[in-house]
Image (cartoon, rainbow, N blue to C red):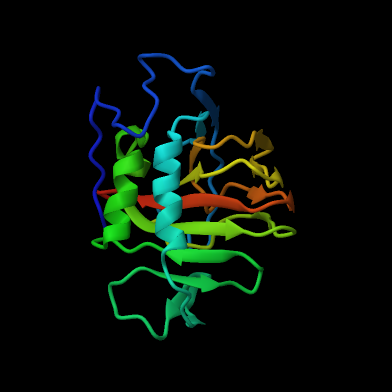
Amino acid sequence: MSEIKKPKFDLGEFTQSVVEGLDQPTQVVEEEYEEEHNDVEDIERFDDFIMILPSNITEEGCNLIAEQHMNLPFSEVEETDFQQFQPIDVKEGLSYKYEHHSGIDYSVILDGTKEFKNIIQVFEAIVPDHPDFDKINFMQIAHYHQDTCFPAHKDVADSNDTATMMIMLNDNYRGGNIQVNGNTIANARGTMVCFNNSTQVWHSVDPVLEGERLVLLVWFGREDELD
């Protein structure tokens, strides 16, 4: 899918410049990775890390991403491999939205669509400069309704997925905190959370106690697989 361009200085119109200063600094948590082998994971892995940019995406950028989800009509889908859902009534190559049995609504944003182009311009400049974030493999927007959650899990994916990014698009709700390897991420609109080895790292979303939660989810891979 799309290769990520990573400019060194221009952070884009939708991000708060680190040079100009943030109320909170970038937070990075690094942990040693203990190798595990199974039928899914068979490539060399870098050490685990988590990067958090608190409130880094502007309100305008968050609203632009949320609009891409809200403007898509709901589609009928069928379940395929890796717990993914493919549309039945949408032409191939178009983005789509569906209701999941968990009560969470998802939109799948496909490369080459207008939704993809609108979204990627918001965060492209602040993607971590790390080999695990070379290219976008898959992009979703998740719409959590009240009383929904995502239990602790490790992602079900193939070996091409090496990292995950989440951007919180709103914060007018209670509950719904992201947990990554025991780290609780405070809810704040525009916060970006990135971590690699998501098929090996425990993460979850606490129950949404009141209101609705919108979040952008992006899975990354490497441009060149390690030998």
